[in-house]
Length: 145
Image 1 (cartoon, rainbow, N blue to C red):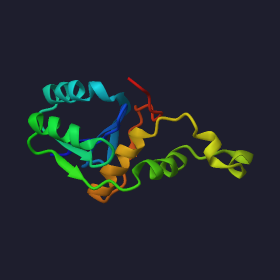
Image 2: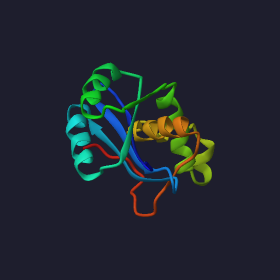
Image 3: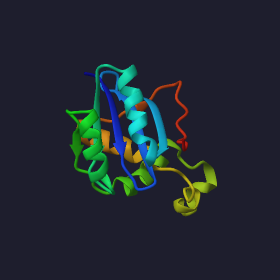
Image 4: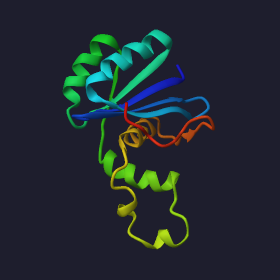
């Protein structure tokens, strides 16, 4: 099974990454509202027959784990540590600051970013102990659905 969907659960929104472990590429990166997570997973299960699911055990994960276990019996629960904090660092790996901006405090450039998808990527990279690249056709900026 090479397709993987990783979830960074949150109270109001969840980060979701869909990737392939064979080619180490991310094909979807998005932030969705928490109340539609189960609907999103059901849709993925209809379209993807062989897909592995990971979920971080952080904020509000207990509710999602309980609900997802009914849909995905082989759900993998991953120890999540500082994923949101690490997502800020990951953001600047993907989108390095150009020129003089690199001398300014990085936090001012990340105030309103949805980092949840990058937190899901960190959960996936930690679990598989490998780095993933973004496929060329993906819009690497995360968005809210």
